[in-house]
Length: 190
Image (cartoon, rainbow, N blue to C red; front, side, top):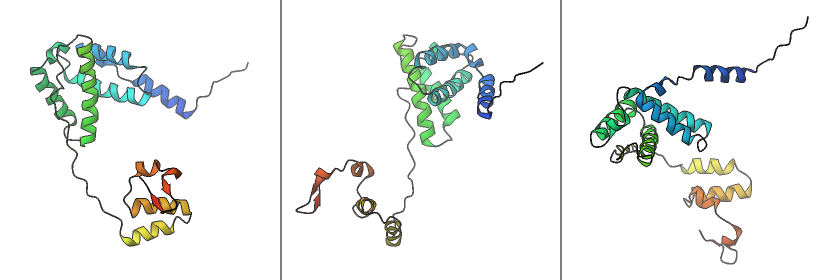
């Protein structure tokens, strides 16, 4: 008697476990049903990671308003409710995280308006979080010399000099072509 066993890799087993424990109970809530319909329509336009992010954000929305219907979020009272939800759920986090989740929630409500499930978008007047000032330091002359010394290739050194000495932006440097050089006058036109 011979027994064959299909061996799973660790990654395959982990994926199976994640899929088995994905909690889709939010779809039982009134707003969760609309979220499920929205995600079904977005499924071909989102990557797997984006889909997971959208679903997580909208699962939180459906769970927060589990006793309400989508029409209960019509402006103006809906704006207050959604603003409270955003503040309680992501208001304490980094502005980028808050804004990312606001974009997802806003896209959901825009979809609901297009599908005529709502007459107004409750996120329309919710302000995005302002990024806090980031402390930045410039390279010291010694830092610049060390960076240049670590890159002996002439092409790299030219690019680094343009970045470090002339404050050329990375995107502008990427767009530089040989036709931008005036070899006679020894000038680069950006």
